[in-house]
View 1: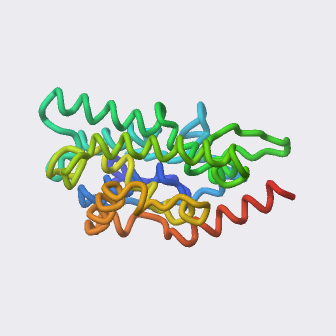
View 2 (view 1 turned 180 degrees about the horizontal axis):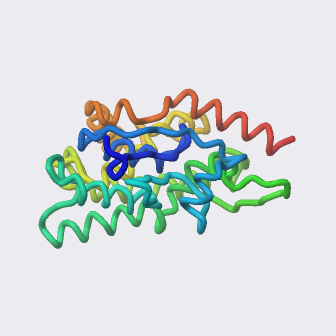
Length: 242
């Protein structure tokens, strides 16, 4: 691959955001160089390529950085548009897919709810940091507070189930950007189950959708192992409790 087309992905193994990018690249059949980042000791390259947020993932294409996972996914879809379109061609459906992808990131705050422990790694400094999130309450609180957090999280998932309907994917029969945005969190379902959320019972359509997505090689080979994710949670829980 010529230098002007060289692709480098700065990422961390457990990141669901980075998994989005990996899935998109796999869907397009694009080769790239993967560089694992130590988020407690960020590389000079990461700090140079994402000086604003200093976060992964970052896709470096011909020496130019593209940051933020959903922005990267759309970039990939535009640049390599020869196969597997991830955004609908219909303007309305495209806008709707973007809305729900944004919902996953911002409105429902599923990111914080599911991956508090991972965010702790990203933002950890020498100072004590407190992150208020429903996800933390799900696994670190007890009694009524924990139950409220669980119900709120399940409510977010059920709303997404309503959008999915009886379709195999979120935009009918085509695997697309909303599927890419959400499926990486499947790796965290096992951890949620260990803290009392029965995903099969509570959200059967979402689980069936996830299993359908996992039949795609681009997905199954891009997601982190769910048991390793659980080990990560337990490790972070011990550190926070210490």
